[in-house]
Length: 52
Image 1: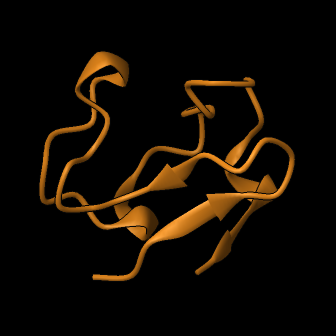
Image 2: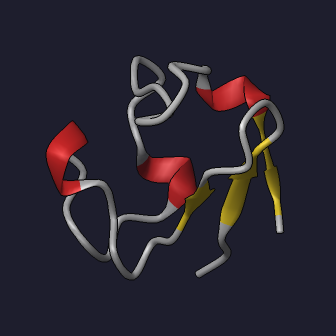
């Protein structure tokens, strides 16, 4: 699964780790994250992320 980086702050979403604090379990592909999810560091939306 591909990692994605926030274009605003540089946070990297790693599907192997997920975002447990944001309710996204490990093993969740970026495409499967709800559209309402935001970057845990800066609050950017999914549209502000790009594949690494």
